[in-house]
Amino acid sequence: MGHTVRSAKYISLTTFKRTGNPVATPVWVAPALPGEPFRPGELVFVTLADSWKVKRLRRDPRVEVQVCDMRGRVEPGTPRYAGTARLLESPEEVRAVKRAIGDKYGWWYHAFAAAEGLIMRLNPRYATRAGIAMTLEDDPVAENAADAPEGRSRA
Image 1 (tube, one colour):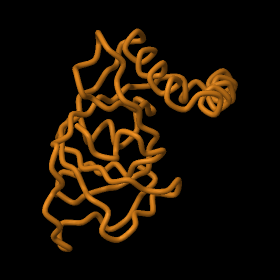
Image 2 (tube, helix red, strand yellow):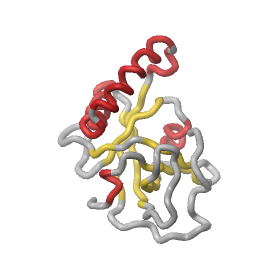
Image 3 (cartoon, one colour):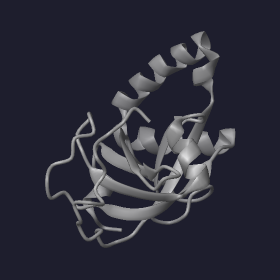
Image 4 (cartoon, helix red, strand yellow):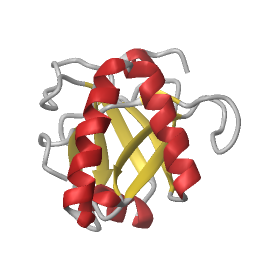
């Protein structure tokens, strides 16, 4: 996979509700590290284990991604890539995902992770994480305005 999603600082991740309606949210994403638990070419991110995006992915592993800014805004004409996601839920798998993200984002991610660690100690709801590994198609999705997500959500 040689497209710009691999090097993007943020991507807009689209998952799908039971109705088929798309829900987009911005995430940090990193190329998977070599070896287990990853597969070649995957992109990974971490999120709350009980988030809506995890619930949607349990039911439907389809994803679409686009490069975006930190607020999830996508520039017109930005290529959209389809793929599938799988959940990585064991503590070892989540640590591997966090290592991959730390390798890409460096001190910025480590500062965020330190603050997150404090929040996790204060509020147990935030303690359980899930890793997500995505495999994307090499070619962008043909653009159809009716299929495009209607914007980001707090999913």
